[in-house]
Image 1 (cartoon, rainbow, N blue to C red):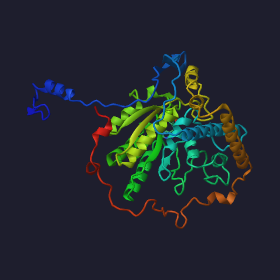
Image 2: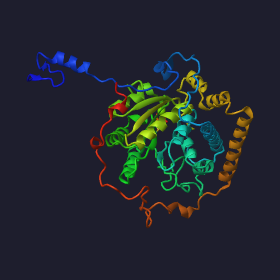
Image 3: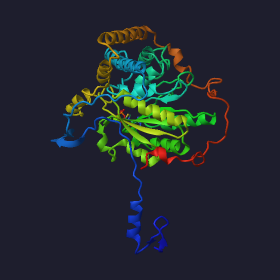
Image 4: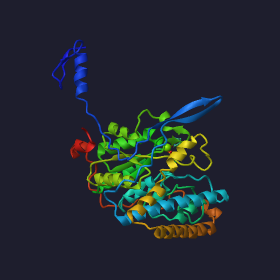
Length: 428
Ligand SMILES: Cc1ncc(C[n+]2csc(CCOP(=O)(O)OP(=O)(O)O)c2C)c(N)n1
Ligand SMILES: [Mg+2]
């Protein structure tokens, strides 16, 4: 190798200078900080073992630590705390109602649960402004509620009723609303929402607005190619994507340890050159504050943020999966960290929710759900001839109205022109 001067260190590199040049480069390495808002950092891992002919998992580490408190929010008012608590309750109780409907044979297809993840779904969607966009995953049913769909919409959709958002043509949460609620319909392909929401943010920028677009991805889904491609594009173009990685320890029956080499999924933010942050996904205040700050960053045109929400999927992949592969003590550990029970306790200790007020709030949620369940149950199935309606392009159905105004520029400004602000990347 020809000997040449190392630009940074001014030292000679080449056959005799390789070692010193490497040393010089390493000493110049930047370290990258991922803020971690958690008040507890669980110290255990899941290991695969063989018992005779069976493959199973065991937990290694300490599961007997005390439950962390809820962190104070820097931004939420008392009223907003109560609202988030109510959304989480509605989310959980609606899923319980869906489970019952399934067991009564009234659901078409499966039921997917966000049990234990309600704080992540509800508090993040709550941080979005009304005219901004979201693209939920199948477990983010809470975000649909926050966004203005009613439990009856969701129950009718699961029962494939004529009056459901997709008029009985698709199941579970495969529906959206691009006109009023600015919600891109979920599909099952993992990661595909990321380039789509990036595209929505680009569309808004072409119309002169820097908006936040919120979407979620699982620990498993974060490893797909489309996740990387979509997020990288958002990073380069400084588009306001807010990506919440739902780090819930399992991708179907695969523990996170067995499909990624990084310890924290937020570390991947460094590879995109964007800020990453870790929150306790069972703490609504942490989820809200981190999402709120990411939304503000999006408004300033500074680009995407990656938020890792650590929690646990408290049921199987879907209703057909008993999750027998999950060590029972993991469920016990996370049950003690339940987002709703802890938030209720937090609100009571703050003096913001008395026992009576809580009872009244629960009764109100149950009344709403019962009314909606009855309405959904009694509503008709579609007529056979409706099956072919609204499927193919009808006149005007491709005309998508501009949301934010006329297109102001033909091409998005390159990241370089916008200026890189390394200060916001938590480099030390
Ligand atoms: C591209 C793609 N690959 C595989 C699947 C099948 N699949 C659906 S969900 C899932 C596991 C997802 O795990 P994770 O991303 O951790 O999300 P979680 O279920 O934990 O919320 C798999 C493999 C799919 N829908 N799309
Ligand atoms: Mg997962």
